[in-house]
Image 1 (spheres, rainbow, N blue to C red):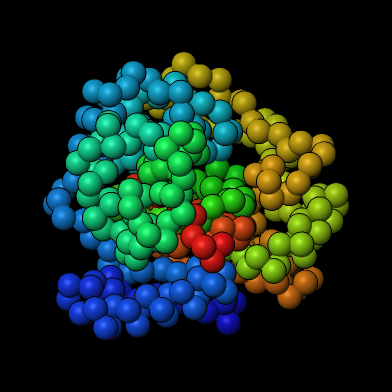
Image 2 (image 1 turned 90 degrees about the vertical axis):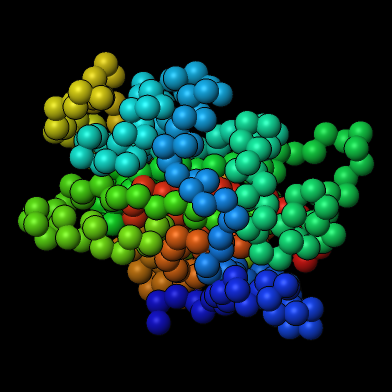
Length: 350
């Protein structure tokens, strides 16, 4: 009742080898109906061919071999500031949340141009698992227009890229592991290839109840909201209005976070200022393109009440490939430690 309907076929039912060319042609045509309308699609049960390929310990070893032990894109989820954590310390907290008081994320590693060189086995596995290869194959997909650019042109970095982040099940607002509301110029497909444990919510009051809750739903990785292209102008105007009033929940939390009480730094988190907090800018150039907003459940309810606009809202589980049409604003909140890989593509429909 609170979400737009979304088509979610299983990967087995989209495998040309298993279902035959006639049924696959029908499935592709059905996908194209949704894609032409600008609907997102979630393909369930996507798998690679290399077992254990996406184990975080293997990823951590590769990162340490290919990068400095301290990376400049390990980000504190609460402050948005670069952290001093090493790769080893980050993955210690990724696999055992009790080792860190705060949540962190690594975004866009490695860049798309380096992915196949740095992680050739993972690159091959990722390409193999993608549904609808006509669109998603970044090498020779016939309906991926980015593969048709002249060789002398310098193509944009369309990926693939990894998104490695911690998360917690209960929404708290400030400090949640989120990708803020934004809008991309190209189409994209995002695959959840590994899930780990969840961080304990700061709002929890009963340790036993919370521990049971955090261990539940081990395949539930992230909560998505994707908005329709035709709602962009209404959404933008409403965000401007709410921002000027100071009524967005995330915005209020940022303004009230000047000097909150903090738990003592753990052994892995010493050596960085503990009172640095993000501050909302006084003026927004654009409430979507600035990537300063995240709509909580409270905000989403207010948006629907005020405008009638509601997004596609759904859970991304382990093995889900989320197709996001170009121009659709979207946001993501991680419910537990997640390793996702995404690639952009350019379809004729978009």
